[in-house]
Length: 84
Image (cartoon, rainbow, N blue to C red; front, top):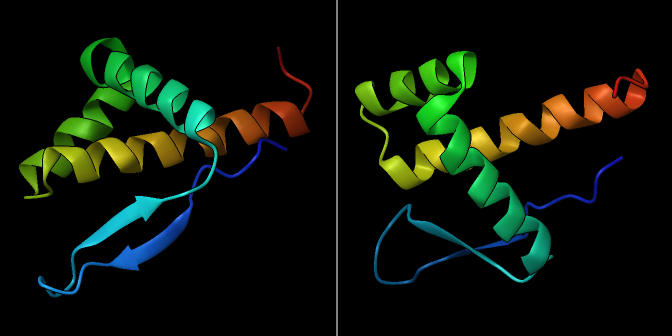
């Protein structure tokens, strides 16, 4: 399985309900961010997923993080089924 990119979540004290990721595997997170940015612009199904989240009122960075998580799920499934 891929190493989890979801790091420890720390709630910012000044704003209720706002979270920020800290720690974890920076190289994996950066690579996923770049791939997610590319998918949000060009890939058919993942682009539609990203657009739907943004149209439903999610901030763009939150939608991009959801896309990163979806990519991890897809990659884990590919590894489990030995699809290359």
